[in-house]
Length: 396
Picture 1 (cartoon, rainbow, N blue to C red):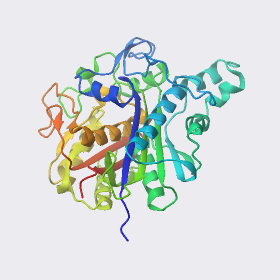
Picture 2: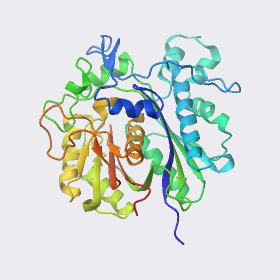
Picture 3: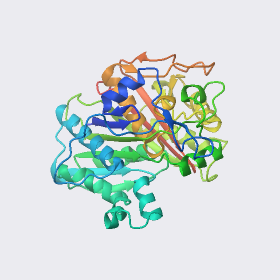
Picture 4: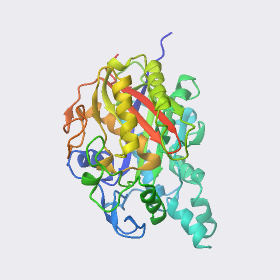
């Protein structure tokens, strides 16, 4: 018996562009980065520099009176989940009750709450301690929806969002649930984190991201930090073409090479892509869009160009959105999967306009999208590789 495909049926997002997926989409098409100058984001960690931070909304966010939503991390997480669930329901899906699972994909929990708890003893009392736990933020976000399926956290560095989606698809394929909410949140812009990444040579804080971060282009120096809260609802298609995209398949591998650096042979990231394509029932020649991890670092550029030129026979269109939204760390892969899914729904790939000579397959800017197969890669520090294959819901 044929099994209905898994689709992304609802999306929600809070990013440096603002609250909601419409703000995200407008920002991506604006040709302006979401990054702004902030204290603690410069070369020494404590200096002023660029970052695409989540900020308080212009309009107050509605709060369920039965649940305490304290802190920006919690409010943005809850807002993303609320938006994704409402979006799925507006499209004819019905995530409710005992058979809705929740997966929180993350590297860190609420950094601000953890700092308060560890560095400012007594701030917030027991509530300050509880806010620092990822289980607390997940519970607060889902309680108003009355979901009772399995709930868990997954972490795979910057590939965490992809790990969450692939885990959710596995739950649906196994019949454990009828819907899965995947939520990824990262508000880790702090002097300690930014300064550490700048010292490693991966991040840049002293130049505008459209100049400093140039994935697959000459002169790229690395990434600018970003923050985001992103949610997706995964559902069975139920015989229709509703939803944003079809999750055709995917895979994950691990380099086991170095705590920071990518294995220069690229064996495992290439194997990850081959296995992802096989699970999706497609080959390299079938891929139309290559949405790369693309943080603009030398190692990642080299690895993904190797994937493109050796594993993708069609040499598909290449793009990355990190110079626009920033590198949102544990939420980056989820955010970029939402962007690729929305591209099918809105008929356009929101690729940034290149600012320097680059790879010949790099998209020249926003490009019409009428369907096709997307390969979304993610590369996490320490050797985490992930690849997810999407297509339009009308594609077969």
